[in-house]
Length: 140
Image (cartoon, one colour):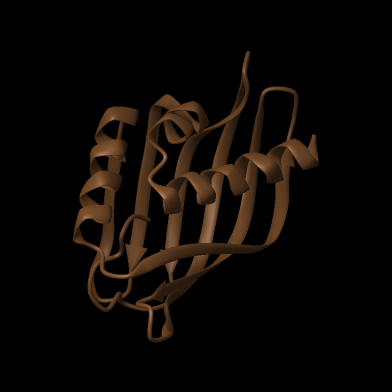
């Protein structure tokens, strides 16, 4: 089960970075909610519902410059049973503009996942960033 949960979280990061909408649809529940805490901006969200979240992601990608990557590390399953789980991961977000790579932000993701017939899906995502974001995020 732990490997399946870690795989779901990694699939999210890859789909987000590639703006792979079908893969994001597959990993998010229909009623997913996303909430962000950004220093200096407070709590943003929740962004509620898969359609609204996907629009949020598309807008973020349209506004970003360079290639943004979400690097997840220290992925830990905090709780899990047959139908639900909570997973935490550290985020390091980078931007590559072709000439240089910069760290945009760091933070902690908390994923609330639910098991479905097709596997684990993200029902709730919270992200607490350690710093305000310079420029656009390009997605959470």
